[in-house]
Length: 312
Length: 112
Image (cartoon, rainbow over all chains, first blue to last red):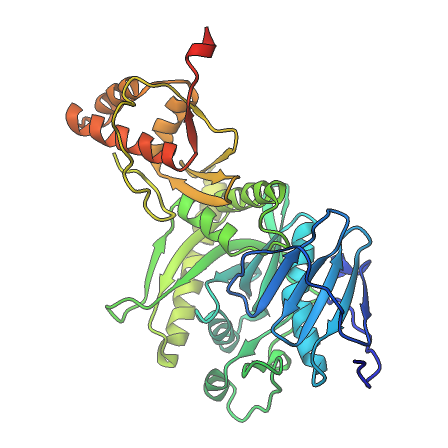
């Protein structure tokens, strides 16, 4: 079977992946699924197959819509459409949110499944499983005058004395209910043909081209407590470090060398940043208060740190 | 002694007959300290475990080759636990680490 539509041109929105080539095949693969299927994560309907030999490509499949063979040696991606109705935004969603973070993680930095907002020049990362409310809370920060840097993948690199983070691209994807509450009247397209989430990136202040921002604090979003109140607690080092590793991207989670690298990077970040767990009612009426609580924690710690530095 | 496992509590292992044994850290275990606590990574299955302060204290003794008896004595001296309670908890903790493949019984016969 061949698809009638000619192949389109795609590129990664990440400077570090600018030397990767992306080709699009005209027809579905005859036998792409070789090797061992790796454990599935919770970041959408993606499966990864590890090659039988080190020199062979990985294969990623996104639902029944599209696949990609990944040759890390040649730095090439070959896209395999699996469905005739494949839309361009679905391909971009697959490339930007599933392929790119995994490739970037192979190159060394810690790539977290995290939203990121800029609070007075400080980067605050929001982590939690899919559906925890990272994107809605990010949109809440936008309403409070902060910049949304992205809502899906955050690359963190260590530079002497500090950790700096960059969102892979300025994404913000919201369910229709959140759109109607936060951007009433907005008319946004879906992020992919399998999803009802809307792409509202045009409504946020763009932070894509800004330089990496110092990571100040990390908040893990926990389920709402029974009290119906906002609660914030400091996370212990081990709990925080494991949480970072579990919320990081990896092309091959079974690669022990990369696993040690992720642990080392996560431990360094744990020792450098303030890491909290926050629980709050998932009610739009609380959103501004939750944002203000986080801003207060971040700013008060920053003032304390500056005072300590001055006195020392 | 809390077994200090944040990645799903390590079920108590069988503490029988390990009181006098010596242990060594498995070559498949990677340990990283974070803010007074530690994270263990079992490279065989990719599982992470957290150790809080007491667990880190015991782990350091294991790295130095201490046996369960000397670890128990140290725990009693440092944390003021009653000896039977400390003995039971230390042995259960060590058995749990053994069961998870994070430590191994040292080969005393081969050590000379």
